[in-house]
Amino acid sequence: MKANVAAKRDLHEEAGANPAPAVHAELKGVSRIYGVPGQGGVHALGPVDLTLRQGEFFSVVGPSGCGKSTLLDVLSGLSVPTEGSVSFEGKPVAGKVPDGVGVVFQEDATFPWLTVWDNIAFGLRRAGVDPAEIERRVDYAVGFVGLKDFAKAYPVQLSGGMRQRVCIARTLVMRPRLILLDEPFGALDAQTRLIMGDELLKLWRETGATVMLITHALDEAAMLSDRIGVMSSRPGRIIEEIETGWSRERDSRIASEDSFGQITARLWRLLREESLKAAGLAGGGS
Amino acid sequence: MSWAGWLRLIVVTGAVLLLEVLCRAGVIAKTVLPAPSVMAGDLYRLLASGAASADIGETLGNVAMAVIASILLGFVAGVAIHAMPRVRRALDPFLATYYAVPFFVFYPVLIVIFGLGAAPIVVIGTLFGVVAMLINTLNGLDRIPRVLLKTARVHGMDPVRTALMVKLPSAAPFLFTGAKLAIAYCFIGVIAAEFIMSSSGIGYSIAYAFNNFDNARMYALMLFIIVLVTVLNAVLFTWERRIMQRRRR
Image (tube, rainbow over all chains, first blue to last red; front, side):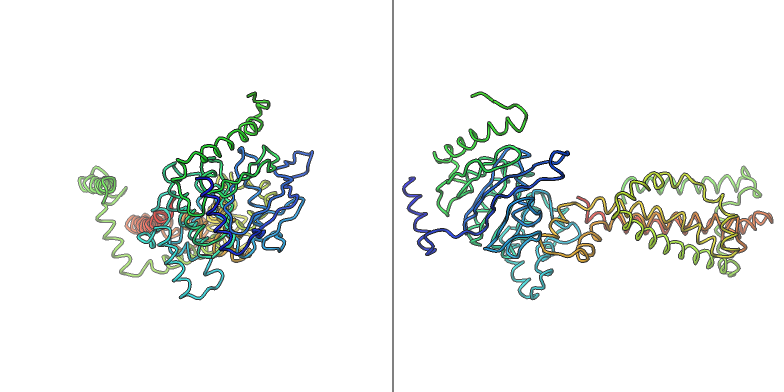
């Protein structure tokens, strides 16, 4: 089975005619310190070195408060690193979200005064895209996230999962080449998370975008990712990168495979120590 | 209509009918309170004769000016104070205790400054309305979800577009509440000011009728004010609820 998966991956990479996967985004020696160090300042992140490969699905897991969201803010350009450099497609990211980067947040980011359709069209209208093109892309996205019957509804009429789909669709229509997701399913129930995970995989395959998912759910990371970065307790550093070896055509059914259990167990072992440190219970024993 | 709505209607109608019966039966003397039906008839004749038109027009004009001034000043000051957190911390206690100050004690000062006429009345009305608008503007700006501002940044929006396309619509329900309260407070301020520092307007007419034992005119004008303010608030309330229904999270 494992050999089979590896073979599939090889095929895929050959098809892409790209033997060494291209670097899509990169963080070099990035630290983020809030306030003044030593005077109540908080060293939230780093130093972190991280390379996102073109088209991969990368997840970040770590104990709570370890700086996962800070990592995303810095990579997206929403926040400027105190030290180090960030680049996207070879160009430096400096205090501005570059074109081609989409972000989905954990909180409900729908605009309550706009219908589902207008929410999804928001970014395209902002960018001055041709109305016919907006209509085409939004209609497609509404269908893609399964909200066709709710296109004229307001967010208040939707469930939490549906609102998060609106946010995903709003990002999708912008055709991002790098999609960053900050615990997008954190506020959803377990069943909805599983469905949304499969939808995210479908989106990733269809767009060919690079995805970085921040999550605290180890099984979610193990199921969805090509590669998983494990972060230490604060100040967050990446202490291990794990390759999962899944085929590109995967879905939630891989949760019943042996290697899924092995990956999850390995993540849990790595994180247990860090979570205890984060909770102020250092040592932890065995 | 809901059960509560029917109950409300029954209570109000019942109270009016009870008053009618008590007046007609002579339990309440005519010199104290005319029967509601008599009041309504007096009001109809007063409006039809046009004898009160000038006063009504003057009062509504003063209220309109006070409302516009309150909403504009309150909104602008709210946005400015929100942008300066230190100033806001210094001002907070004043804003919180603002309505504890009885402004009417300043009426001699206002007359000295602005003279007799519409100006001091509009100023009093504005003093009443402006802080309600200001406080609600601050409240609305405080409650803009941070994630929406982050979303604006992800879409590369500049501060002006963010203000117009994200902050303003997000704060809109609170701004509406502020405007609604400003309208109510301006009515109170203007009519009360007309009682003590004016020679025209509805407030003045009521005081004048009272001093001259003209019960018919006095009660007719009181009824006019009550009906006007109730209808206006009902319209605003319904409009607000319609907006909120679509919006509440």
